[in-house]
Image (cartoon, rainbow, N blue to C red; front, side):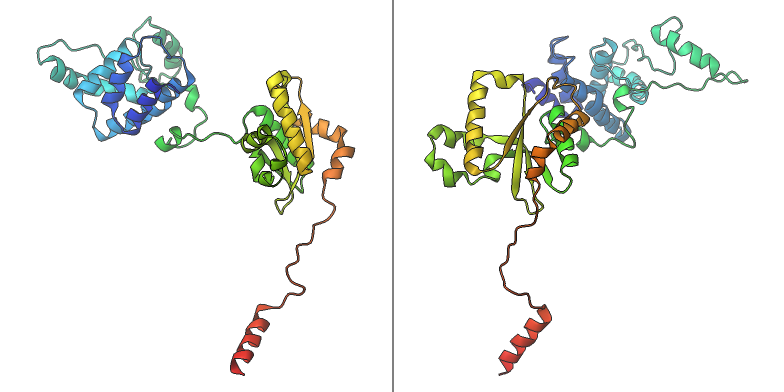
Length: 327
């Protein structure tokens, strides 16, 4: 995220419509206007903040006129009909306050319920409006549906739009492979992108290796870690791709292989020809085809972890303690 887009986000977090519009005006027309980050800000976050301002009557005259100009010239897209009507309702009074009482009133923004005859909006809405006409000549209002919010149910909260959360899986390939591993090993637990230091005692054995191994062990992670219910590591999986044919990546893979061999943890590498379209079913078939080898990874029994030779009910222990105190 570049500094300009981050600055726009900060203005919206502070509910500063004026600062947002001023910063948006300074952007060169056409620069970054198609980026996904800017689209999310202008089409998801900004409409929510603007709706709050209009509902509370907190949109000042200067911001109303500036917003009208940006929408009118096509630099800022506003598709919510309620927002367009809200701007139009405040426009005349705001225009007189900014431009003076004698200034000619501006043309209102076009809404999606009424468009001039012959315009693009008018041609799109002419047929539905005629079909919806009642016997008295009334027209049922039509509203444009925005694809970005077509699958949103209920009110959209601003905190959800400004979240910085992301999936723990680095790619769709990892997500599909993780699903396949969990289905193939239902009695085990699979975790994605786990650092090596979380399940390897790197301080214990890496001293016998080179400095390169030591530095790499503290920065490396594995794509999928397979554990028992007691969180004991059983095996690990790596998803390779064409990038692993590079000499530098191949050298790091060798370092990882040597660390796993020293830690006595199996490391299995899987490579898909089409990393973009591979599905969980494909990975599952691959695991089934090599089930004879993978079945050896399944723990046959729980390892005992006895700290006491026998267990005594709590109430018995309480009575014994009371008897000793009495004596």
